[in-house]
Length: 126
Image (cartoon, rainbow, N blue to C red; front, side, top):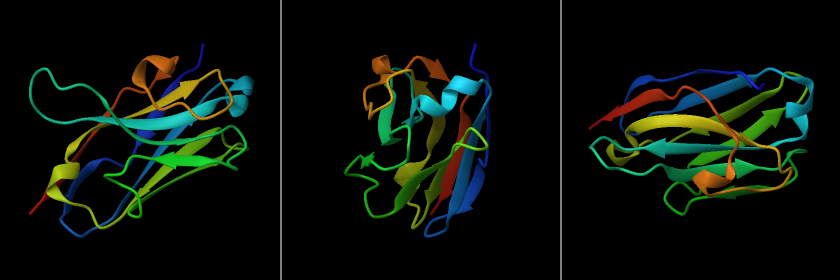
């Protein structure tokens, strides 16, 4: 079982930056594709893809809404994936989830991920 611990949420002003991290347990997790998705406030909102990275870190993929502002990276020695968020906007306010897929490549749809973190709120004030 892959356990995940997320950190780096909270309140930040528009234009600011925040780094999220997600540490996972289990030796094989370093071979997994990893990603970040978010769920905006409001009932019925689906989780929206944010960013993904392959097992080695050699390939990344971003949603258009965050491209150029967010950077995903990973440290396989620590089984940790990061999301560096910059130039934050109020519309980035959401609960952010890290996710892992046993597939080693890029995954960007929620149902393609096998393991999820507990989610952490990021609120961007205007």
